[in-house]
Image 1 (spheres, rainbow, N blue to C red):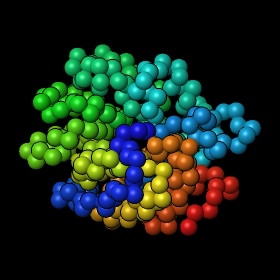
Image 2: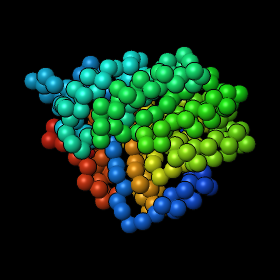
Image 3: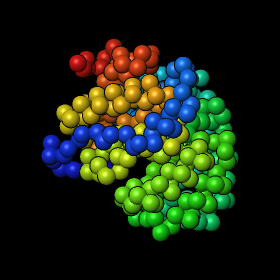
Length: 295
């Protein structure tokens, strides 16, 4: 994942921003004593990207991946609308506790730019629904140049989205968060329609670390820089997620990318170990018996 990559990550201030003032309000509104659902995964499962992750004899990559992780962020669905039969095949290959978090297709977000996309959305959802209970939050990622002048398209899209299918939205144009009036209108829209506000943590775009939750699900896309700071940044996320757990969060969807993806499983193992220690959860640590022990 190259978005936000920088040549010298050691020069970046990775201090995590404080929460937006309304995040606590959103979480406290649903607070109870239940433990949140936590899903952690990579963006892809293919061997070419996750070098060194699979045992040499592995033939079914998804089968093995889903035995080690409980989630996958599916970037493949951005580039291609897969047929219903493919989603059924993925469903059949994975264990009962596994979930898929697919990205909406680029025809919806980048080509049609949310306009006249109803038929494409309907077809996409019909096919993806074959994941049944393993279908997690679907996420919409808008192009860098999709600006606030097209806010009306976002309103129509969000208000027409089926209420029974969880949705998260990621904006990359800086005005969505730096224009206070627009940002407040956006947060209100997402809150009223129970849509998650995707948080992206990447080196070169600290401006979109808005830390504003709009429902009780934190959908976080973390991009490591293949630098030692990747681990301390994950430590900061563990502490922030513990704070959100204390405030009432219901679900954490956390996906770990790298500029060079081969290290994503190793980072994920470190992160899951720290989550288990701090949030008192019991997630499987991927390849625990063969991964390098990280302190």
